[in-house]
Image (cartoon, rainbow, N blue to C red; front, top):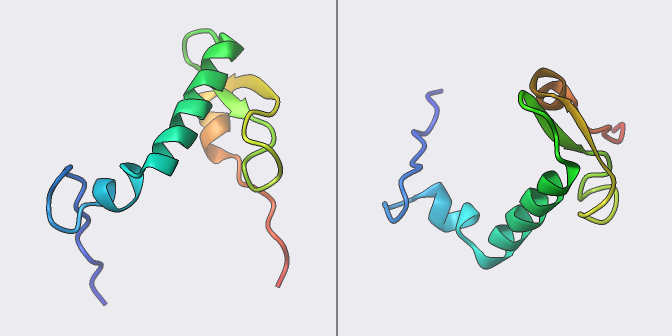
Length: 81
């Protein structure tokens, strides 16, 4: 089964931005994450890791600096089915 082609362009028909990333609620969440990341003052090549993500608690929780590789490989714990 072929995957549906994704549309990223703002304003285009079926655009992901218009459907989700451009909503007021999502813009506020993204601004909050960026604000918290800026507070962490991570050195070059490192990213802010939000220790407690939105699913686990409040959005502006504790933040620590980790490498990009580590931050992008960390998976949240999921409930067993």
